[in-house]
Length: 385
Image (cartoon, rainbow, N blue to C red; front, side, top):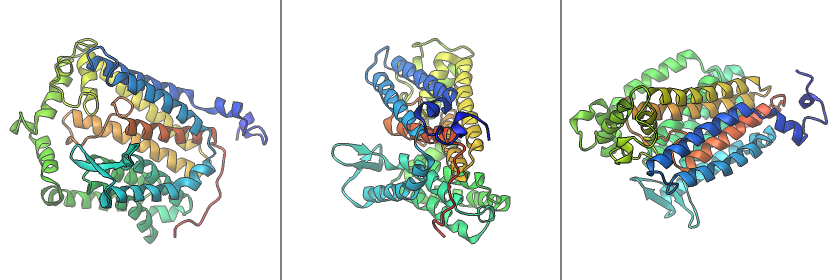
């Protein structure tokens, strides 16, 4: 333990000391990516702040303030909120399914319409799941985490929201929820034998699930991913146009505001799912590589922060938040490159969208809180069995 003011009783809770412990490198990188997103949304709109760039920038400014405020929150509050938050989010997903409050948009009934606001609980479910899993693992031994009958509880925590969200149907969010949960179990020390058995089970289940468990439009997306040229003007259109945008940028790109695929609106959902393709078209390989390097730097810094925590809850929760951020980048990048089916996963902080940005910023609020309170040790609680 160091001799810094943060470690001396009576000093560590001072606001001025806490502010110095925030990782400003991580904060700056988040600002850089959000700034690039704002610039790209301005370009896509033909050099206008409306309808996307101004709102994107204002949202980020407000959520940046919120993130820094959350960084000062003591881990005991995150720990205490874990199970209640998970339960509330499950209830919200159930309200979508079984009450008139459910609102359909984009072919999926995945919004909760409260009249004055619409909420997409599946986005926040990733946060609730990570916190709930982190609390469970905090209260159990390394042997339980590696392999025991008690793992039925975290498996159930993952499976319940996965099934409910997939049924909406929101396959992209369900996939990220499942992968995030699996990543947390892996980071917590799950046995390699279990991981291998799970991988084999997934490989065996996927083909029949694609053929018989998916809606027709979802199945078409998967089959189109395998052969987009089979329907170039229909289901294969999105991937083909994205590949054209990616390839036409070359090494240095066509120039800012000069991307024909986005400016002439050939590229679908260019402000959300396929904004990375616009970056590649206008700034080429160099611009795309630089952006991905920023994402990688964020992930590495966040993982380093998680490793410094003296609390098992802090380590697991911050690493889990980093994992779902990394999954956003990986899935969206693979999707726009034609390496994965189009499932509607945004590129974090780059794509336009309030719910996904809020999820990411709350997640990094927790990561920064772990950094600020890295010497805090939480008591072991019994929690779930």
